[in-house]
Image 1 (cartoon, rainbow, N blue to C red):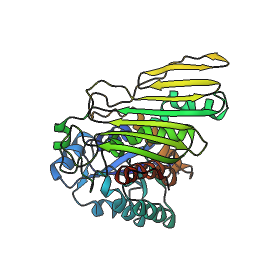
Image 2: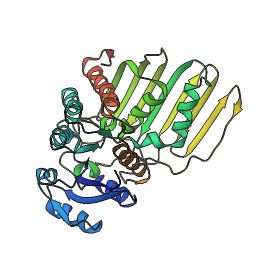
Image 3: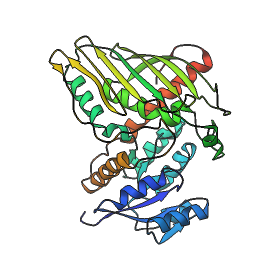
Image 4: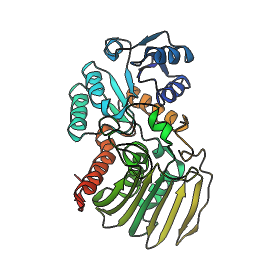
Length: 340
């Protein structure tokens, strides 16, 4: 494929512009159309990024024959139907996290893309963090020895005004959850990507501060399939300025890193330090940096050109959702729950 990979974006709210900005930075990609149910929002985004065509019905965008891939940037509970329709229209799909909020819908999304011969990628840009990449390599190479504990501290600041800004925010129907499903899911994906899948969980979660249906505070005890234990702390209720932090402990070493970089990297080989590049975080609010999205979208373009799987294919992208749904079941039942 020598031509540019042509994108359409469905959803022009907070995250759509990050996709548009990234696409515009790539020489081998082109943004040809955008869509949002709010016409003024679609029009303004089209004008901002120099796009001629905008729509209020996503089916009109999917009916075009000059779009290779669709970025799905709508509320979480709508991801499934749009992805399935896009696949049936012959479009590759790059879906924002979470893949969807429903197990059956995720299975249907993956099947639709497979049956129609298109690629399905999920956006988990924290996987592009140099510190996470290096940590994963060290774990896989056995430099930490036997992994005994792996924790994710995922504290974000989201005000009541943030939740009030859109009717769907903080609802089970369209947000699918709160501090874990919307914000913490990035870290939940990352800790499993580095350490391995979680086998079972026991959790507490509730909305302690914000006036929302879903959780703004959660604590989770985990057992990994490799036998290690771990903890997730997730919140949007805390005071602003907290950093997202990951800890991995083995019997031969410890790695601790966060949005600001490496905090501790010590093994039997000694201590390590390196520049980790731009930080990713939401400790002060929902503002989005396109830094991580650029790497994810660049990878999606390359996957289409070279006919390979994207960085986070659908089957991989669903794992964080499966874990979060098990956490919610544990909260409801007050029991330990197996992740399935």
